[in-house]
Amino acid sequence: MLVSDEYIIERVEIDERELDRDPAGVQLRYNQTEPGIIRDGVDGIAVIDESDEQYRVDFWGYAFGRLYVKSEGVEEIGQKLTSNDGEIPSWILDSETVNADDPPWWVPESVAIEPTVTCNNCTETVSAQEGLTPRNLPPSIDGPVVCQTCWDRQ
Image (cartoon, rainbow, N blue to C red; front, top):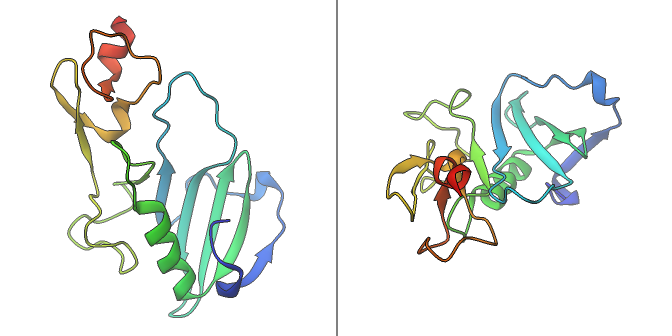
């Protein structure tokens, strides 16, 4: 679940068509790095500030819905989704919805607003959204990360 039950004020059952796919607020996008796998779950989240103590969280993808959460719930989302031990972040803040000079209070300071990765094949630095971590890399690529251009050449 996105947020612990103790931080949820209300769950709202809505029809998927009611969700605005480009809502106001800060958006996080799931970063699909495995080109050969289709993933079911949540692909996007919007955190919308409604008051000092209540936030609306819209989420969409295979699963979708709306939550109203306490500020602690928003902080939990920031901690869970922006912490990553992998080569490429699994969740990326949408830079069009976040001011890099003034990120929301619930985004940890260590989180890059526009993260980049280095391709282990061509050594180019690309946006983390263009980085891939395929399970079956050719032996000629020395490392777990490849850019979309190099992957397309394989």
